[in-house]
Image (cartoon, rainbow, N blue to C red; front, side, top):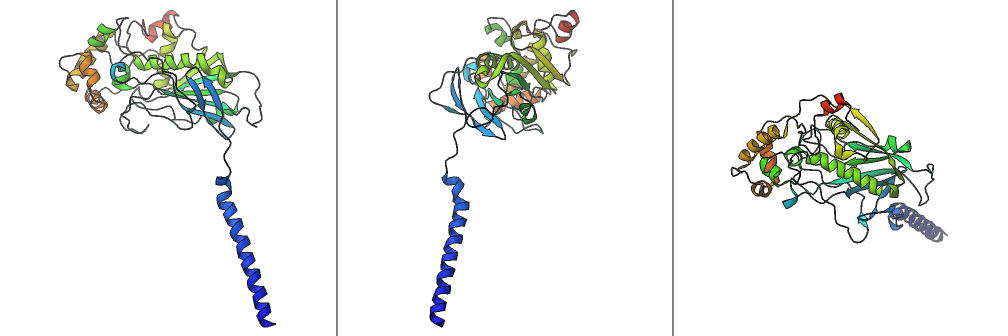
Length: 331
């Protein structure tokens, strides 16, 4: 009897152990064994993108809105991005534009940086649709003295949960975004240079006009907003004839509309100093474009420019922001 009872006890213990092991294995490996539902897919003009769903928000991260402004495209207006094949992954933030390390972000030397992110209330794929009509759109331009910062600085979840689609944008910064130079002016059909970062932002706004319907956004209700240098950017677009029709409302957070803005010739003088510091004493566009990004950042830092002010280039800005506001010539 004792031996039989011992065998029964041993068998029960083994069964209990196996049962516990199976439960533990199911808890540990079960979720991984089940395939996650595919993220939402949206067809843009350049090709389809697959995002991710989290917290009731569909997120499409790292979507290119223009070609990489590198090589011959450095210090050129943004160009259209070529169409891609297949479904592009849009589940992670993409590169930041070149900048030095700062409290606002990490250092970057990658010129392939013209990306934006779209955050929308979750729709379809089993999600409850609370918003049936096309949604208003808010496009965010980050701050950072036009020297540093990136599109993933802030979490727009609270706005999205109110039924707004939020788009956040990377744009060229510092010398790569705002250098004016006689050689660049000479090769420009508009006889202008500088303000490439503002042109990037306007390219992103055109992308919104072309694509935001696919995300359930209303291209007729676009609000641009930004903080600090982002607010200055908003002021600049209000005064820019090139921004007409790209947005309908504007919110300025700590911007400045009455700054003393340089003329094109004044900005070119700083550009000439920058070229000398870069080692381009021949003052040619070819030398400027051949310089490594790290050298560009170092040379611009050596100019001791504390913040960038958009110049009155005659193209993006035909007058200062203050003059445009004073005369009522703004969007």
